Image 1 (cartoon, protein in one colour):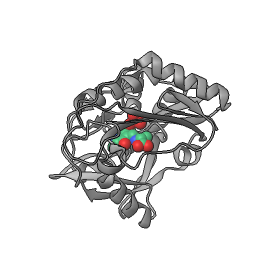
Image 2 (cartoon, rainbow, N blue to C red; image 1 turned 45 degrees about the vertical axis):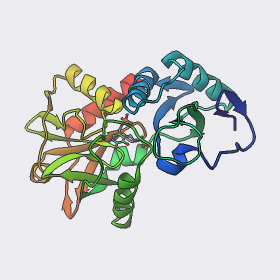
Image 3 (cartoon, rainbow, N blue to C red; image 1 turned 30 degrees about the vertical axis):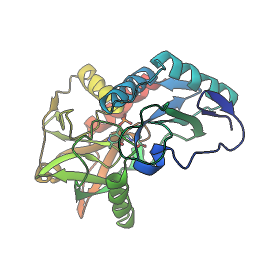
Image 4 (cartoon, rainbow, N blue to C red; image 1 turned 180 degrees about the vertical axis):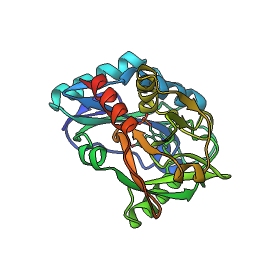
Length: 272
Ligand code: PDD
């Protein structure tokens, strides 16, 4: 399919510089945006977060939220994407290897789309997660290309036949390796506050709105692994997972509860 690379729409494979700082240092940022029935979902929020991530690591972007949306829309049209995802990556640029920021280089932007169906099976039947020590850095609020901590955690989950590794830092559940984590206890929805220890998920924001509409109290308060095991319902969320119920945490089996189903329904109504 058609790919956007540094200002051009290219059909062939792109040539990547060996000196791109994205490869050498993971020095860049990214977003994953949803497409439902050929339409972007919450794209503005994603690109606002991209601009914030860029600014937090001092990458100066020339493009606006609208510029990114226009590129995505062209890719969706030309590639005839129905249900899919768009991957957006910006690196600091190309320069001879040196940890220090290069003095003059332009950011390198890569955007491509791919087909991806809604995760209906996981949403319906639930998924297994494991808990794991959070060994990542202390700026998880930046959607950085440095994903080694996340990748190692996810691989450990995969080996344990789980879809997600719930991260535990200093006795507190932060988030998943590529998702946010919520518990429901006595009718209240709890999730970690949006600070430097988690990515402030766009899906998390949509869930917050759904909860408000359903009169489910939404409390941004950290909780322990014990509270996770003890919860009435557990959910993980992301652009690709939407509202996915957790039916097993480590060795403990969990039921899918009624508030999870209500949130899933409310979420679906925001899509269609
Ligand atoms: N992951 N936390 C982490 C560490 C994530 O990587 C993600 C997203 C989320 C959920 O954010 P959102 O709801 O905005 O997708 C939380 C993307 C999908 C990924 O890396 O593939």
